[in-house]
Every structure is written in structure tokens, then in C-alpha cells.
Image (cartoon, rainbow, N blue to C red; front, side, top):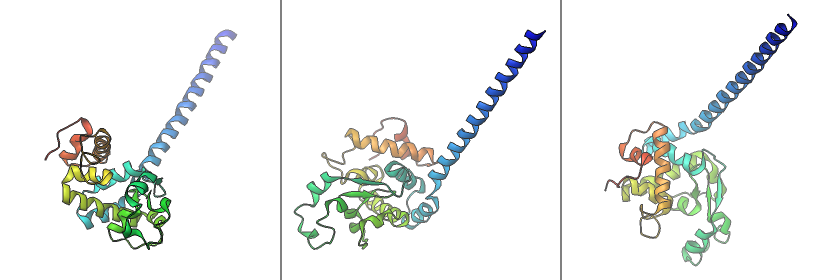
Length: 212
């Protein structure tokens, strides 16, 4: 009778609500995945060209961009400690228009978080450090710097040296926890993006002995 019709009506209403809710949730999930993919692939053409230019694994550069800035060309991080420790008192910097501005030269810019000092080391002659937000300039300088480190220290220590400077007990030693965490993050995304180098990929799973 009426009670049975009411129950059926309630069940149909609940089913419709549940179906609509799941449908909307599914659309949002797909949209989120799509946006994530677009974000992750936004620099692929630039990275591909630069990886060939410096003969560096495409997936390694991409993984480092992900760790350094989450693919954000507007990324900016001020590091006053760097200015106080390495820049103050260095005569080489006197006369540089950016020397007196600690925020300019002790900041990290763009996709690969390039510092003004690193950019100058790699031959960049841009006047305004903020121009380092340009992804083509930034990733080119980052890859060039990474190549320098890998050539000098080898693959694993080179990746660490990109983050911490020259390997030593005070900064680039892979046994220091904060450095190893960086290598593990890079390895995790390297593997996720399809990288095939087993030496790098091994660090994504667990602590492993460095290969050299």
C-alpha cells in the first residue's frame, strides 16, 4: 500500500542522491588528476631540450624541478643565512649592483630554485635576479649546474651537491639526514616519472649504500 510506495520512493531518492554524489565526486577526482598531470608536464618541452643539450637524464631534471619548486616558475625562497655566511665580506661582490641587496642575492628563484650566485657561476649575465623566474633560463642554469656537480662528484653526490654544496662533513655529506632525505625525494619522483636509472631509483625505496 501507501507505506510500500513511500519506502520505494525513499529508496529511489536515496539512490539518486548517492548516484549524483558519486558522479560529482568522480568528476572532481578526474579533474584533480588532470590538473596534476598538466602541472607536472608543463615544463616537459623545455626539460627535454635542455636534457639533450647537457646530456642529463630528462627524468632526473624533472624530478629535481618537482622537489625544488613543485613545478612553480614563481617559486621564491629567501635564505638570509646564506647571505650572512657566504656573501658578506667577499670583495668579489663589491661593485655588483645587487651586492647590497641581501634579499636579491640570498634568494632562490623559479623551477630549480636558482640563486643569483649560482647563476653568475654558470655564466648568466642577467641584471635582475627576478628574471630567473623565466623557466627556460632557470632550468637551463639548473641543469648546467647539476651537470657540473655530477661531473665533479659523480651521480649521487652530484645530486646532493646541487642541494647542499660541495660534499663535506658540514654540508654535502650523504650520511647527514637532511641531505639523504633530499636524495630520497628526488629518487621517489624520478621513479614516479618513469626514470630507469637503477642507482637513482634504489634510493626511492630505502636507505642504500652509495655506489662509489
